[in-house]
Amino acid sequence: MNIKERYEESPFWSFIGMKVDSIEDNRARIKLKVTGNLLNGNNILHGGVVTTLLDAAMGINLKLNIVDAPYSTISLTSQFIKIVKENELIYGSAEIIQIGRSVACVEARLSNEIGEVIGMGLGTFKINRPR
Image (cartoon, rainbow, N blue to C red):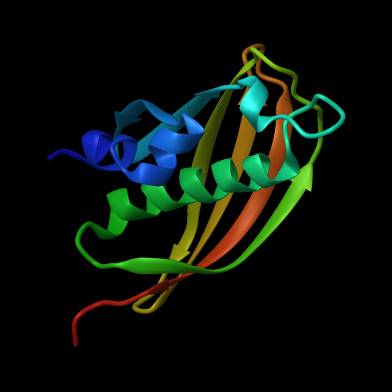
């Protein structure tokens, strides 16, 4: 199973509706079509979904760079910059800031179809490499 299938077929990705938009040069971009199920009481995208997308963009990009080593999120900050409404398509990308033996730092951005930044995040990940 390739990495695109592995992520898109995971139960949580499937439940939310996240997809891999592209993978090239060890960099992935994810996408999500915002549905009514993902809106909060104000009829805008729930902040938890924004945070989920930031974490997912960081996670798949980290996996592309550490291959078989398992990892888990230690900390994640989220900045909510622009609201998102139903039927909008949003994209997530990430940049590896640093990868060490046991810890990695990754930055992510979410944008809408016209390239406006709607959210940003910074994550720290524990890498569980074999000894």
